[in-house]
Image 1 (cartoon, rainbow, N blue to C red):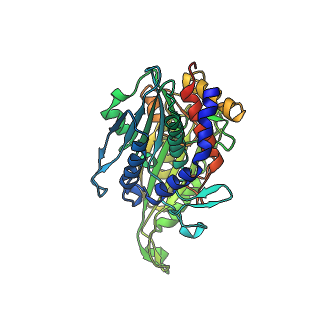
Image 2 (cartoon, helix red, strand yellow):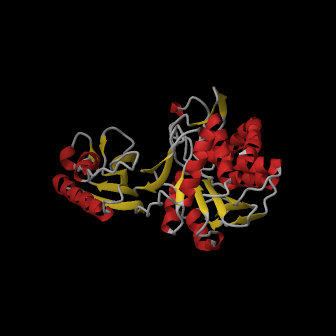
Image 3 (cartoon, helix red, strand yellow):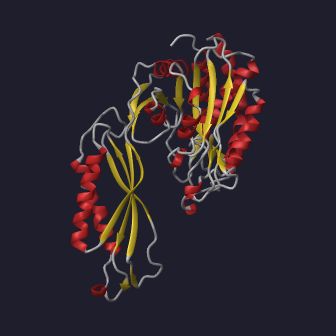
Length: 412
C-alpha cells in the first residue's frame, strides 16, 4: 500500500494533461463509416503519439483493411509495459470509435469540442470510451513517472469498430493475433458501470438488431383506396411487437434491467411530402435478450407477428438481421479478474463491488466466447450515446487508481 499510495498520488497532479488528452481525443471525431464517419485513424495517430511518451516495451499494430475509410484500414493498437514478475498480462481494453452526436439541437455545447463545467467534461465520447482510455493511460504514466514496475505486465489494447460490431476491431485482432492473449491473463473492459463504481459486470444479454422493410403501394394522400400505406402497416407492426415483453417475461435479478427488452429505435425517412401515401417504410428494433431465452424462439414470434400484419394490411414485410450476438458464457464471479477488481475497488473507494449482468454489449462478450473470462468495470453516470454526454473528472482519476491497484497486486 505504501508503493500504491506513492504512485497514486501522482495521478491527482495530472488534471491538466487529462483535460488536454480528452480535448484532443474528442476533436478527432472517430465515427465509423457505418454511421457516416471517416473512422478512427486520426484518433489512433494521436494515441500512438501519447503512448510513445510512456516508452512502452512493445507496440503491436493490427490494422483491419477497410476500403470505406480514407486511409484504407481501421487501427487496433496494443502497447505493453513489462511487469516485475514476467508472468501473466493485465489487459485493459478500450475502444477508439464513438457514435454520432445525434440531434445537435439537444446539445448545450459543440459535441466535438470539450467543455469543462463543475468538474465535468462535456463532449461526444468523453465517457464512452475516452474516460477509461485516459484513466488506463494515466495509471501507466504514474508507474513510469515513479519508476515503479507493475507486478504483472500491462497490456493497453485500443480497438476500433466497437460501436458497430467489432468486425474491424477486437474480432479482427483475435483472428490475426490470438497469440497475444493468454489463458492466465486478466481482462478488464472498462466500458460499462454505475455511478458509484460498485457494478462489476460478468455477463451480458444476447443482442438482436433487426431491420423491418414494409412494402405497400404509393399513392395520393386523398386516394387511400388506390394505395397501400406502408407507414400505417409498419406502425401497427411496431405496436404489435410490444407483445414480446409479455411473451418473454422471464426475470433474472443478476442483470441491472432484470428482463429482456424489445425497443423500436431508428426510423428511416419515407416520402418527402405530406400528400403522398408512402409505398415503402423502414424501421429498426433493438432487442436485448436474457441468456436463458432462445433467440431463435424470439425470431419465431416476430415472424408470426410479421405474417399477421402482412395479411391484415396486404403488404410485404422483409425482416433482416443487422446484428446478432447470442449471449456469451458468463465470467465466473470467483475468477481472478473479478477478485482483483473487488479488492481494488474496496481499497481505493471504500466500497464493496457486486458482480452483475447488463443488457448493453461490450467487447467482453467477444473475449468470453474465445475462452477468456473478461470483466467490465468503470465508474460512470451512463451518459453514453446521449446528448450532452459527460465525464466526471473525479471518476476518471479514481478509476485510474483502481487500474493501478490491480496492476500492483501480488496475489489475487
